[in-house]
Amino acid sequence: MQIDPLLKALSEPTRLRIMRLLAHMELAVGELAQVLGQSQPRVSRHVKILCDAGLAQRRKEGSWVFLRTAVKEKSEPPMGAAAAQLLAIAERDDPAFSARCNEDRRQLAAIREAREASAQAYFASHAEEWDSLRQLHGADGPVESALLAAFGRQKLGALLDVGTGTGRMAELLAGKAGHVTALDKSPDMLRIARARLQSLPADKVSLLQGDFTALPFVPASFDTVLFHQVLHYAQAPGIVLTEAARVTREGGRIAVVDFAAHEREDLRERHAHARLGFADEQMETLLADAGFAPEPPVALPSDALTVKIWTARRLPAAEPFENPETQDRKTELP
Image (cartoon, rainbow, N blue to C red; front, side, top):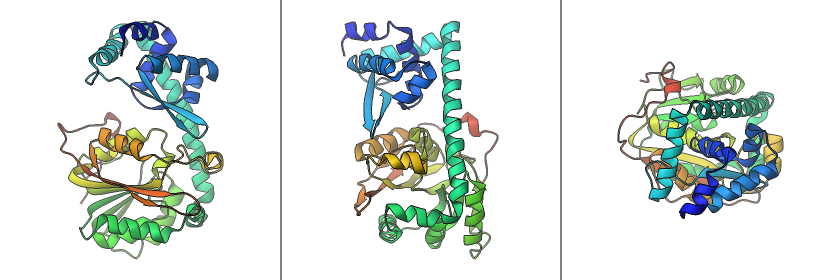
């Protein structure tokens, strides 16, 4: 990292706004263009300058380009950490800049809420046929067998099935778990899951409506957390996994079953996918940043898309993490 391109990159107001947005989450260039009210080619030029200066990093996913910050307040290189700290101080102490940054985040939230509403409408309209739809991307049997093998003989303890859908995975894993909490944002999916799981003892399973970006549980509630073909719907998978880490006990396990990186743009357009799968390096970074120690992934190639199973163990937390969005919605579990 060199001082001259770094200072030049930070000398333009739009690029300062981009850096403050990226300080909170990875974003698609198209999202930045909408928030900033500028054309995508113009935003791409700003992105190039930030990347050339070492302040940001690009990642291509199908026809979309995602951008993430390359600098944090307490990380290497020191010059990048100093730049990140300066921007944070500027937002705190410069009223006009702070107001602009807050407005940018409000606009971003509105954009994402609209996309999530569209996804929810998709889930509601396809709830009854969900299992058959999912099989379009590969047979469930081999994936489920591989997941059971990845967990091995150990008991799952308190299990959280995030985005339970029709309850298929909750039903499959109930015998290995002490208690299953099946969570989904869609009431239609929960209705189907409730019918599917009604044969289980009442004290064995709980079904709850909730959002995976703000899980309604106290910290360290679960021994095992599962995301089965769910994370590709997340606009910000890093936030989702950080929430998962918050509710996972030290030494507990997480399993993410999802597609390897691919370029099936039709899944975005027809099936509400926010992400076109995940590369191993990307998933390893997401898990590590959230507070997990990643384990070697398992690949399950098929004629359609390759499915991966990524597992990891929860590292000791330096201090309890509290998400302010969940303070009024915590649920004590048995």
